Image 1 (tube, rainbow, N blue to C red):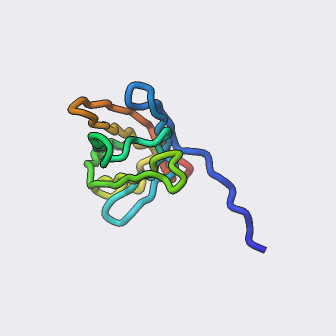
Image 2: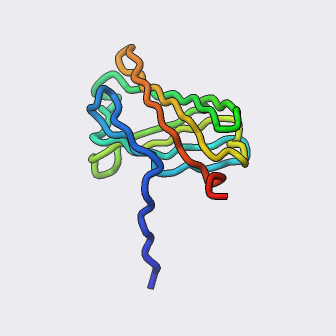
Length: 127
């Protein structure tokens, strides 16, 4: 019998795009040269084929003074159509001693910027 996976609490959530959508950050993955945020947005963002796409960029700083810049990402509709799921990465790698990450996500829609500010606790904050 397979053990059940327990759903983890989201790292952060916020209303975005003038309150019309809810962004939920589910995971922060560290890599050797970068880190990646995995998120969902509900209701889903419009399909790029149907309308003007929503673009996303990331800037971040940590609690020990390091700065991180956007390294790209991707998103798309979930198979059931209830939300958008995506990921966005930044460089350089997240400092091992960083306990908190202040993230500024900017959603660009129809030439208008919609910033979102989040504070994420990292695995280093548990040490």
